[in-house]
Image 1 (cartoon, rainbow, N blue to C red):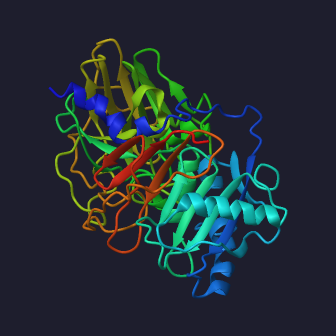
Image 2: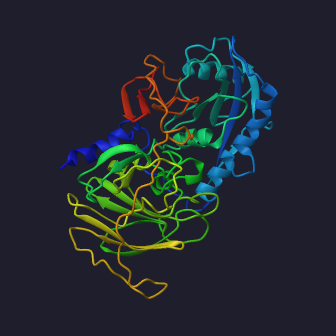
Image 3: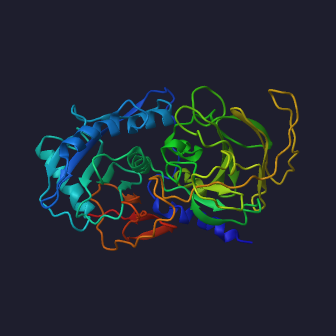
Length: 444
């Protein structure tokens, strides 16, 4: 048995690096939209500038605040179903370019952050007063940064190492997800259906925080972490029984996730079905292990044996679960029916037996679990759409931590062609393939 491997799932997925904020946020009872003022700032260096600054300045507002589905504002509005919104902190939506008195070489994001805030303060823009979150966008030429995006976990800072004239939602949305307290979502391979015997392998294709990209949205554990599922939508299971799930995303009411006790950890079960702009390629019931209540550090549980590449022709429900059990905590789950926008799931606690059948509410007919299907998960990087075959990168080692008024963790994502995520060494360095999360202590 590899029982100890389960304990390592949390570590590998970044739980050790998510010291700030592992307790799930509470949904707002009044359903009022929580707005966060974000200031995108274009910065240049003494020896490196944007090749087409006017085009960068013109594209940035649309990336962050546009009304189309590819903007960060639209994405977070849809994912939170109106509970959360990124709004512009400045009337012109993006400021700059601001010239920093530093060279580009070395990828010193700490110094970039400090000098940017000093330049903004000189213009009368102070963090905490005029803006709450800061997104610094700078030209990739000469920096040597081995990532396309960097974000504090959780926190107010993102850095966008810009290639070309516009960054995309895959990078910006992913880094803002880190700001929400979400780490990289990995994948736990439990091919015999027993969660006592699992190995970490690759990334989850069910979240923008894994390899799913924006079209996958966020997963149920991440929505719970953010407080974007109400108590009636994320049901904490306290007794064995049969539950009906509606699709995780989209409008309407009903149970969207089951939050099941599993020893010191939690097991979160969701049903995915095309809704709004997401889940067009995801269908079926999926499960996640949440280590010690760290909902932002969940791992997709994958019971299948074959790891195919992203973009293949496998069906949308190819890696959905049908049955699973954790002998150690005496928890079992069976999917009794799934499809057409809802699923029926049976949960057995305390070693009780699954019945394996129930009357479907819609048809009145009894269905039984199907065999576990073939896997079609993604092994791409965490949300930037880079090919799975891209080579690993090396740690930057001595890169300094950003200035911060709170305990700060960082997560890096993507880079230019042929480069996967990396972050410099620090108090703790945690790696999943090419996914790396860094823990930094507060510095004076």
